Image (cartoon, rainbow, N blue to C red; front, side, top):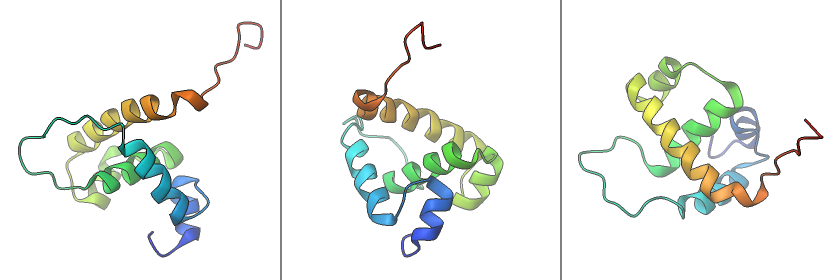
Length: 102
């Protein structure tokens, strides 16, 4: 998707690759500083992209696993990790409706 803004828009909902990269860098600053043990197959950028695709298209974990070359359980772990990171990084822009609005 790096060279194709139309694909970025389709898969993530973000307007272009530059925006995807900026948002990825912003939320990556909220990654825990702990070192992970073992070999990671995906970069932080790939994990972020996988999560954005899941949020946009709600593809099955098996599908995402095939596309990114990881196991279904790894996809699940990645999504869980990045949803927490997205919450921390973007909570200042999330507006929860009041009781009356709901």
